Image 1: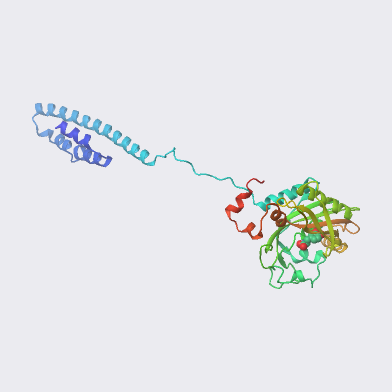
Image 2: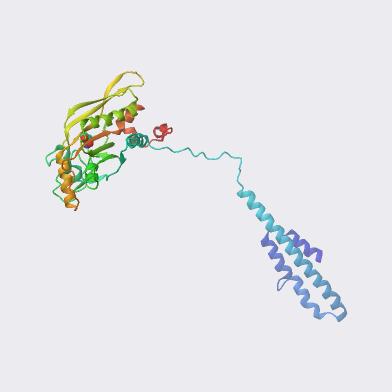
Length: 348
Ligand code: DAH
């Protein structure tokens, strides 16, 4: 009998089956429990003998159940571990190294060149007030740059800055000049990198968004020679000791005199040199200084710019990157194609 019971426990193939066997044998109505209940019906002699036997059987069953339960638990754990096992011999997932955008690299290089000459890098807002983008820079109300066709206006009645706080996506980084001067005291040298936006059709050399680097130096007795020296130093840092810069007279409302500047650039493939037009520059227009002082007065600051001298420049960043690598289509910068972007992994 005990043999048979022990076998039932031994054969329970799961924890559930084992529990069922336990109830069947030791439960309230279990076989052994029934037998214990019937002890009273036996004559005293037989009762003692049978009682001892049954209690021994009960202890043996309880011990067997415990042992079997532990074994089943171990089996279940073993099965789960086997199922969830990681094959550590599989090759891992590759995490390709990231890299900064090629334009970020070129901008960082440009800013670095000027920082080593003592310039400080500053930033301005991309959503700019018409006053800073145009008026304070001596760009009058009728100037074509203000037209809807040229500018992304963010306020509904465009063109005029008579509307208090009229905003637009800045069309150049020059408004940072005004923002900086209205809060700082010369002498200083700053460069301001950033995105600019023009409402125009896109093609291989035009994008509605591109990057500029603005420069501004204000102090006493600053001259065109200082401007040319700064740009020549930049050109040499970019293109080597043979680099040259050239000024051509031009017009920008916020400088006088104004120039477009070119850098002598040698195509690394053909070995041929050409003048490369990089941007605009000039001596800060007295009207800009006047507007800044007016702004300072309105803010309760001392007007200190009248009589100062300074130069400013602004250049396009995409152009420099396109010629260097070379990149034939400006749109490639902003299409976010991984094969294009990862070509510049070697950079900063
Ligand atoms: N802001 C001008 C543009 O986007 C570029 C420029 C010209 C900037 C002359 C200057 C400057 O600082 O002096 O076309």
